[in-house]
Image 1 (spheres, rainbow, N blue to C red):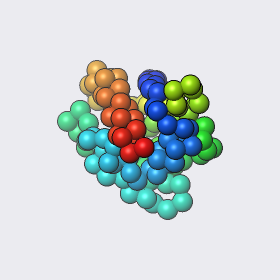
Image 2: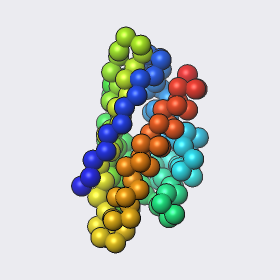
Image 3: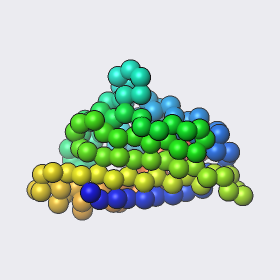
Image 4: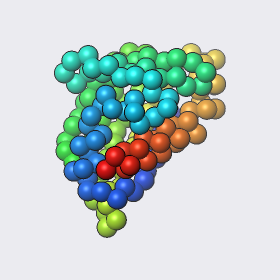
Length: 136
């Protein structure tokens, strides 16, 4: 499994940032790569993502939602991934840290994805946090 981390400081309280992050369906508005997110009921969602020239669909479940510190998820199918947003109050607002791990079992696809995924996740994470901050 590969792990990627990205963090940024947003000029808002952890409570305000968390309130936006927990609205999972809205992530489609925060990134150009996220095409759509469907609620499957409860804490389950289907993500439709277009990245590295391919369409990816995977279902995720929220595994931890502890306001305003942690929002974590894990995929149920598709590309196996786990992610977590950790929010920490800092002097200038909130430090938001994204940790994402993923595992692609197809070696050919994995090589292509690994070349693109680090800058891609960094871009998506920056885009998401910039758009969340703009909404605040």
